Structures are given as C-alpha cells and as structure tokens.
Amino acid sequence: MYILFDIGGTKTRVAVTNDLETITAVEKFDTPLLYREGLMAVVEAVRRLSGGAPITGMAGGIRGPLNHEKTGIVSEKVLTDWVGRALTKDLSKELGTPVYLENDTAIVGLGEVHYGAGKGCDIVAYHTVSTGVGGARYVHGKLDVVSVGFEPGHQILDIDRTILGSHIPPTLENMVSGTALQKRRGVKPYEIAQDDAVWDELAKYLANGLKNTIVYWSPEVIVLGGSMIIGDPRIFLEPIKKYTVEVLDGLLPCPLIVDAVLKDEGGLYGAMALIKEKLGNK
Image (cartoon, rainbow, N blue to C red; front, side, top):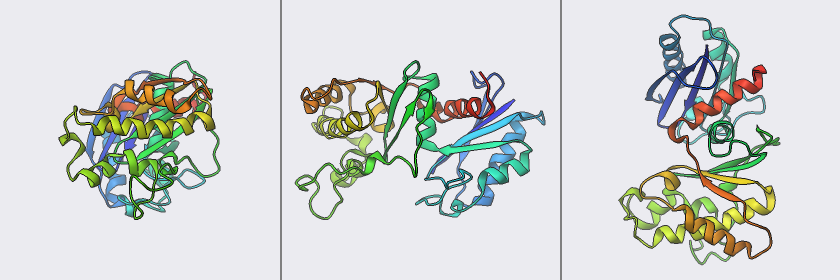
C-alpha cells in the first residue's frame, strides 16, 4: 500500500494506491492553516484509508518552494505556519514509512509526464495558469535538476510597461493569471463571458511566455494546466498555438502544445511517479 497527498492553500487530498497505477480511495478536506492541525489531519486521513495496513511509501506535493533537503517549505503567503517545519520527518515519525515531498506545481507536471498528456515524451515543459503562473521542465521522466527551483511566472514580458503601467511588475504572472485578471477587470475570471475579447488577449500574452519556454527549454511538448486553461471560461488552446507560432516567427518550430488531462488528481498521480522513482519500482 502506498499513500499519496496533495496539500494546497485551500484543499488537501490524501489517497491510496496499491499498484502505483490506479487510485483506490481519496479523502479531501480543507487545509488547516496551523501546521500541527494540518499534520494530524493528514495522519488521521492516512490511518482511515489504510485501515492499519502496512504502508510501503508515501509521497506528495505542497504549495510553496521547498528547502534544499525537500523536507518542508521555506516561504509561503497562505500556509505561513507551515514554513520551516520538517513535514516529511514528522509524517514519517507518525506513520512509520518513508515520505517524499515535492513542490505542488512540479508534482502535478510529473503526473502529466507519467500518466497524462506528456506520457511518452522525453522533454516536457509543464505550465499551470491559475491564481498564479508556475511550471517546470522534465527530462526522461524526471524533474530536471535545479539549484533553487523553476519560476517561469516571474519572467519579464512587458518591458516598456505599456500594458500594466509603471506600478505593477511586468511579469507573465501579472499578465495572464486569474489573480491579475481579477485586479484588472474587478470581477472573478469565471464571471467573464467566454466571448469576451480578453480571453484572446490573454492567449497572446501567454504565447510570448511560451516562446521563452521553447527557446530556453527546447521541449517536445508543452502541457498547460490550471483553472485559466482547463476551466470554464478559459484561454483556448487553438489561439495559444496560433500566437505562439506567430511570435516564434520561424526561429524554431513550435512544439506540440496540449491541455493537461489529469485535472484535480494531477498531484496524486505525480506522487505515484515520485514513489516509483524513489523506491525503484517499475
């Protein structure tokens, strides 16, 4: 039996798999803001799901950048009480099993690489566009080696600041994220009609960010996820592809660009892939 988890700023999911291919049961609950409460909520969910059976391994993702040892997070705007805590060590102590941790965006992408839209490709770029913008690169099925981490949402696009003005940092995240769109329009993204011209405008902005992904990371496929991409309403894939080809302007061929397919369970499938990697399962 293996345990999977996905700790987000709002919701936490804990799941069980016996074959590292399918999820047999899932519990979902609000993520406690206090670390000790959150830790014990995960532990109690694991004990209910496992029924006391031995656990071979446990892996999952958490919101926020990880420390070098990947035992916990080093900074966070929502889960502030979780910062600096040794999550993997505390879970391992409570449950008696090895625990492996990864950033939530990175582990969702890992799920898409092994079980979703990026399966079968050697070099995959994953981007999520939701309240923020994140992403990572994967080579031969593994998260690429980093010294600190990937933060593609913080790349500068609007250099002359004609779009956002002088008071907002001109990053990709501040141009296409749901949070940024809400600030500009004064309503939630899901309240904006699909036929509003802003969705095509966002596709153009995102395409410029994807050009940078292509020239720096040289992926075979770019997998796009997050509520702004696979939600309703959304930034449609076809205009993203069209504008990406335009901004590349023949410099490089445009790789395949596809929607993520695992939806809310991407992090859990990524946790399965992480356990396989760490425990050497085929």
